[in-house]
Length: 259
Image 1 (tube, helix red, strand yellow):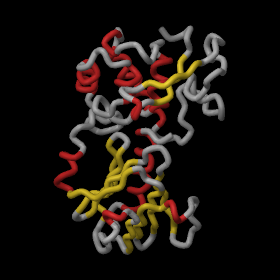
Image 2: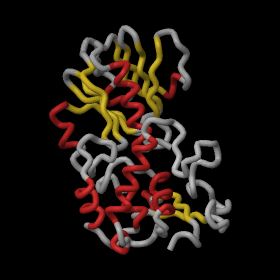
Image 3: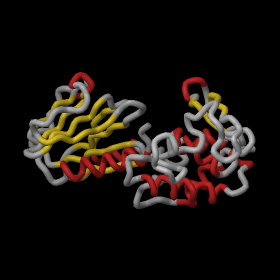
């Protein structure tokens, strides 16, 4: 599942291929932007902000969000694509590389000057150079009645955590996902752990919170419903949790280890 670490790696990979290069082809397959041609512009930078990826050219920022199914790939010319062409939402080429965004949940162009305004709602980026622990803690504590799992997933509080990390963090701190964030004794400690976990995983594809990278052993509770807890053997349970029906996400926890 794409989370902040996934987007960070994809931005790094695209940056290695595109940064400083001139675009020789631009094919945007989203109706609103289909007539825009960035051919001839130089890619100045590729960056991530939480779960958002930004390809900055001379005139615009190509802003994308992977949502659930999206991904960015880079290919040498003539290489076979690993996903079908009908899933491509944008194709950018340079003399050496082809970058393809597949099934992007969001793809839009914004002016470079509007970027900060458009993304101003995001909380501190866990993998950003400007990571601010104190500000993240302040935002989390601003609505003490919100369940801890909902508060951690809210990108307005801190940017980069998705459902996998949220569930794993609650387990590691022994917190029921439904516990109000205001009832968490050590919010700074929770945020520090989030920062350590996502930082430890940002350079590897096999995301793990257990420290074991073997398939099937990488996570404590996420997507392990009805399986025994790795600590106590109690069966992991699952339910839906969110601010409303549109935002509900599957939540997993051990009813013995988490209170």
